[in-house]
Length: 257
Image 1 (tube, rainbow, N blue to C red):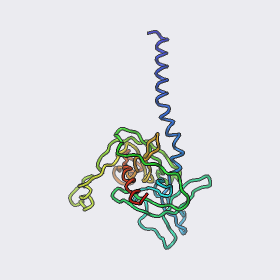
Image 2 (image 1 turned 90 degrees about the vertical axis):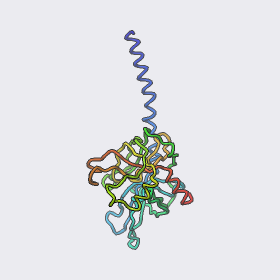
Image 3 (image 1 turned 180 degrees about the horizontal axis):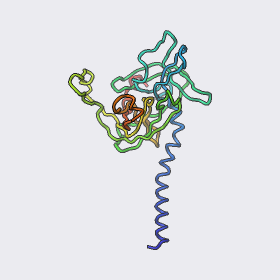
């Protein structure tokens, strides 16, 4: 083979590779503005507190644009309503942070999901994918507010490989640790998405979505922690879990949406 032929073949391969991979890199960049418009911070607002707002986790707009999905564990169980405190969502605009009060509509503690209704006009909503079609090895993305209390209300996007689809139940270390809830879950464990990705406190409630369509396949809800909770930031395991979107659909149906 002549040097000229080798150069032509090499050039052809490089062209083919750039043609195959360039659109995949550009797709997520193209849909991110649309995704970010539906991402909200979740927390509380208290008129007597400094600062007034407290960012706890992430949520995303669904259905009619006036409802937000997050994790059940993100929203506080107690709010000082008598002092004016309320659950709220936070949005970033060119004029700063927008605060919208929210109220709990329906929750699903077993699957760690919560539906909130927000005040004000409708926001752009994300569509749900059929999570039953997800396959191990596929690549997805999630957008949220990792360590948002420190880094602020700036949504960050991470890649996540679907490493496994496995039951959420893990046997306790001993019989003394067995509870009625654990026994019930062992009898009927549900499948979760195990992701090859690093999530941080504040990412809870982030949508896990397809990089081409932007459709939500799941909700980030936990990470595997090595040792003490502090290790989740200092020494992350790189293993994150997400609740399949099918349970979001069930929650929306329960709410009549």
